[in-house]
Image (cartoon, rainbow, N blue to C red; front, side):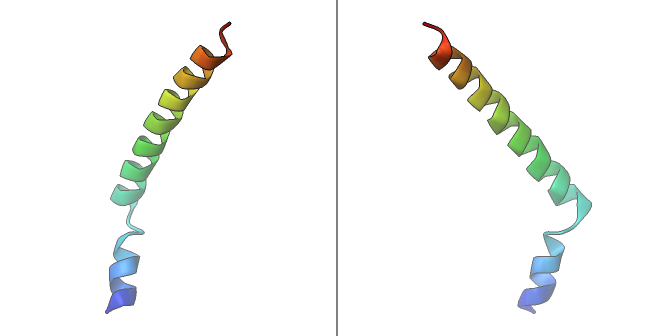
Length: 39
């Protein structure tokens, strides 16, 4: 039962959501890093 639940996470929709969230986070990190690097 647990295995089938885990396989559910591998569906494309969840991957899409994960990718979108990850890219949002990386954008925010980029902004923060740029601000930190500016003297």
